Image (cartoon, rainbow, N blue to C red):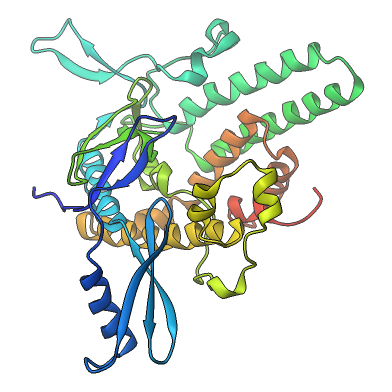
Length: 368
């Protein structure tokens, strides 16, 4: 399969995290041509283009005509990265297994067979979890896997309750313990407890962040790293977005002029220098946060569109698995101790046969 090119992009891994790097500067003549086309500037009119500022994925150019001045943003080719990642995910989903767990080799069979074995997951062996008496796979179904997962959460909260140093800690542990048990009660209503044959699964990388994606000098994906705890997970999880595409939705593009300029005093307090000022291009940080949310929203649509081309019926799969996805998010947040009261609010709604999206409940601006 031919790989889409991302000419002009490479990654710098010398720091704490990977950073996008421009292989070469965009041609000013090409920028000027685009500006003329988009601004409808006649050939007889002047159109001067000069470099203005740059951020991680973008460069800004100031275009001056006889009538106005505008900023044009030139972005690194994110679309090709998203489409290529969709192709990789589709390939993973095409090769299925029976059962859920970490792949192992059965040496007793000839030829050797790769199949799910005991679950090797950070959550299952982290700290005291290694010593807990829980089933560790292989699991026949999502239901069986999550029983063990939630059982670890319950044991954690029981330990926290016993080690509570004051009344507040004890109340927090008791609330989280009761919440985990409510999720356990809700589990069989969403995932069937009896599964035959074993539930189909596919390889799933739970941390597909940009720092785990390797590219060559042309920006083509050459490899994915950090597979230590990757397992074959239920096929419905393959409808989730890669981690680098997760985040809040923002449908409307933020208007640069609607945001305040960057505050020089705040910049000095933060210890930022001239380079940081250029990275923010003189605008308040909130603008860039909202812009990233908007861009990721657009990229998620591109990802879905490409997946629908690669796997007809993909959009139906996504819709059918919404409740399952919300439930697993509730379990993961319960594990981390995040937003317990909002998780309880979501469980309340599901038990009443109301079905708000879990992320919408988390983002509600209420004191719960």
